Image (cartoon, rainbow, N blue to C red; front, side, top):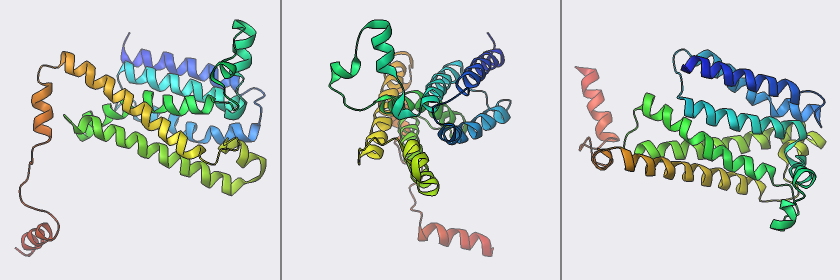
Length: 239
């Protein structure tokens, strides 16, 4: 299947899921707020597709994450009935087994955000910023963490702006004062695991892995920047 066809098939499936879960969400205002960034992301993906087509692996990872997010948006993250689903169809309570007293769907999605989105970010770095060797793994990891921090700040700003029940539903802290830190920590862990997996695969199949890694850590420019670089630029400008 071509990249274009694969992208269109996943887009169609996601659109169908979106429409189904848009019907009678638990909290319409929270659903709309949860999907504000989704709309922006979908528009960006659609308009940049022809110039930058991701691999099928990246599209699959993005698709799975977006589908899980839509489930959280439909129920609100704090009320996704995963335990009721397990009890109904498998006569099994994950919360009882783990001793959980809160709904942990949000924790799972934050971890999977890091696990699933770090590789697409790596693809961007390797193909646009030409990140190689060590930097081809560290920078996607740091970008994923930074994006997670940015989203938590966005959540805080939205909660402050809208306040009331909508702010509480959107934050989904469930009374945990360290909720934001735990979410960022799980996203960071997921991204770290993803990069370890990529490293393990490349170490196995990439013949020049060690050489590329070493070269990426070598100093490419021995002269310092800062005031020395400013002086050099001024000299060039005056000539």
